[in-house]
Length: 205
Image (cartoon, rainbow, N blue to C red; front, side, top):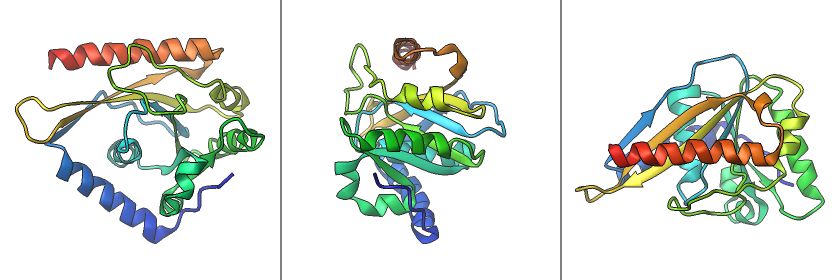
């Protein structure tokens, strides 16, 4: 696996680039429901729908949490964009023995209250119009391996154009209790309930 290799220059640049890119390419960015601040490490789970996902997750962190961000990426994707490793990306290789190492590494990251870890348990891109988002079971190794309390946050990023040339980006967040999620089906159901509620809210905006 490839571990996160934060370098100060790249972190500063990526933070600046994140805000610049999003504000340039989206007409408006709205964040709904700001989670309560805690002194716990944060694990954030989002919908994996586009090239923008890492930027959106970093934007949420910059606006709300201000932690040292770590984003899990597929190893083949990260190897082609190694500059992201210097800003906090680390890898997982699906269906390999090293995937266990990546999941255990994630558990270790979540022992530090200054860390925020972003996971996309879908393991692949899924359309924002998907009726149901499926999760790979590996994330349960992370949740069951946690040795300290964490703040778990679901997020959903949804886009609409309305009358604008550039799309509007709506980001919805909700804090959930990981102790209530005893298996992958419970986690998947909880996220889908949240995601579908977000889509309903989006339609009323």
